[in-house]
Figure 1 (tube, one colour):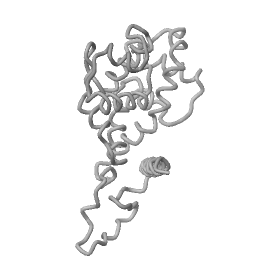
Figure 2 (figure 1 turned 180 degrees about the horizontal axis):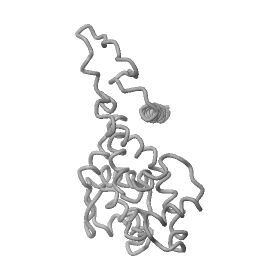
Figure 3 (figure 1 turned 135 degrees about the vertical axis):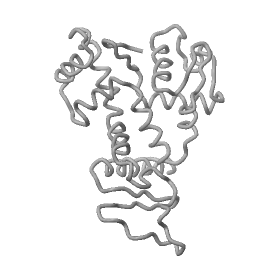
Figure 4 (figure 1 turned 90 degrees about the horizontal axis):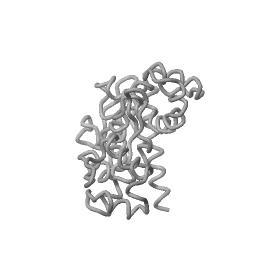
Length: 225
């Protein structure tokens, strides 16, 4: 765990932490002693790199504990998730776990910023001295870059509570007894597939959700070949 001003943040990305949580779940039943996990990962239990991994698991709300590492409910859920839409929903929730990244997203959204600009914004947010900001900015830029799209998607869902089945892997409740769905309201889109349907308002944010879903399904299909 690193710190800038009063803001703490992980030094390991969300995806790396999720991958580790899945390993703990699949190989170790969801809990493991800290020193045992270090042996499995081939790392020193007293090393900074290993400490960063454990700290990130806790900060991303994937695990708790110090001597004994146990997956949280969210850690277990993301490890069990087999349907792409459910996994995406959990990832969006996890992405909003770190206050400094939420603050950054409020300031710059999905825009790409030069690190010097990012450093100035971070100083304004945290109140830290610029030398300390410059020491941390590369790590923050890397971790934030991996989740900013997820934060945008989560905010789109929260801001549009009438969005319909935007994260529901089951068929729409508007499906008729004949198996045909009702006509979509104006300004809505629907993506149908073998095990469900995705129905949402046609906005930039929701199209990003759809693109992310298609990319995930494409990657899953590629793994089968």
